[in-house]
Length: 240
Ligand code: ADP
Ligand code: MG
Image (cartoon, rainbow, N blue to C red; front, side, top):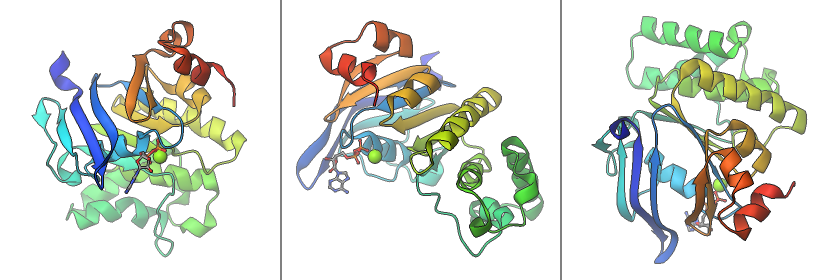
């Protein structure tokens, strides 16, 4: 069933004449947890931002569920992105932070309330709805940021290093939380990290990037046991 996933064909990106993504071909099956991993500057965020529609594609095509979305606005793609900086509104309650995007999209108040409650229940932040971001811990803020994506009921979730601002202990518990979310929601998730441990523990499918090219695509086990080259072996095998 290749038509229900996401397909990148010959995707390239240049900034001011300098190409940083050099023709990416990739198929992401529906419902998969795919991790883009690679060193800083290899193009993970740029690739994710092109999928999100936040960055124009210089050449190539992105199709989601058989629909060419290459030139669509972010809001028309059925995707939602979770950022590393939570980008919460400090003066708004958690409830209003969760519902804000839906309110802007003129969703009914009752439907907003339903989705906010459902997201809060999934993330176990029901008891925090009346607080403001300043009254939350880092992990709680990260949950609210994920909740803002959930309320949009997207087909695909995109995460750009969502845990990199958290301390080591919290990173582990949030990683488990995100894995649970994937099991419960069943959506396609694309997750960017430079952290090999995160990649190995979260992914169904790892995409190893270097300098704007794919070095290997495979299950965590495949890239670990049968690395395509010495770069993959070194990157996946070496603990930080
Ligand atoms: P990663 O997320 O893997 O750290 P990025 O996607 O942020 O990498 O960056 C990939 C390359 O593209 C880097 O060389 C970076 O300097 C360059 N780049 C990213 N965004 C821009 C931009 N807006 N303008 C110019 N160069 C950029
Ligand atoms: Mg990045």
